[in-house]
Image 1 (tube, rainbow, N blue to C red):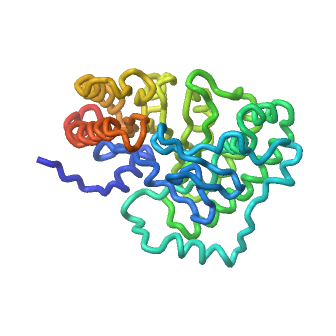
Image 2: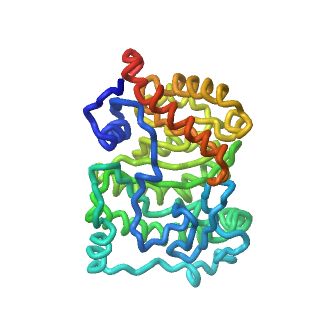
Length: 338
């Protein structure tokens, strides 16, 4: 018999995001929660890709479940010293914002799901989308002052977007993103992060905190070295919290102060399409039993694969069924481990 909970999906998730114990184990669905003004042309989060506000073209990769990446070899900036000639922030007048917001908010049920503003990609990721990885990394090392000037410029626009979204979009939180690490190591040093990236993340976090909005961050790879700085800026939630990080120790150290959304081994053998369904279900039990105790955990198992692959669809159905059969009611069934 299905358990009837008192809170809505939104209330339950927001309790978790604010460091409280959720009524049930949340299925973290950030792609459904992220909000961005339509005019910004979010090619990186739009199915099928497209261009962003700066003209970077994103193309969808079927083998990665439709995830979009900058079009290979088609970068808009070749010399960081000339960024002022290439990178142009949109100009949106004060009088235009109300009409933009009214259009974007038409028919939106603000009580249905959390609404987390995503006013920009992170500075590191934006740099790579402009220049490509090799040239972008060289720019960070060789022309740090020009990179900082560029980051200041794009963050100025993002901060303006966030302030207007606070005014008009009935937000529940801020969602930031910056993939700045590989599976094994960060792409940049902690010193470089603190000098070149963190000040601009903090600018957005300060706006969120001034408006009592909890803050979430997306950062793939082995990026745990940045966690103390995230906490310092007021960040309380992280995805995908990949297993290359010491997730057990992180959960023990921060408890409900840092929600771990993910923690699933999507790169290991358990996520191969050839893994048996029985082994997958056993792994899911261990997964939930390991990270659910104490709260601050969002259920997010997934397998990367073609959207039209029937095996991928069947595996995803296993994740869905397992959630409702076992994971969702975990706190109800384990009241002493909340």
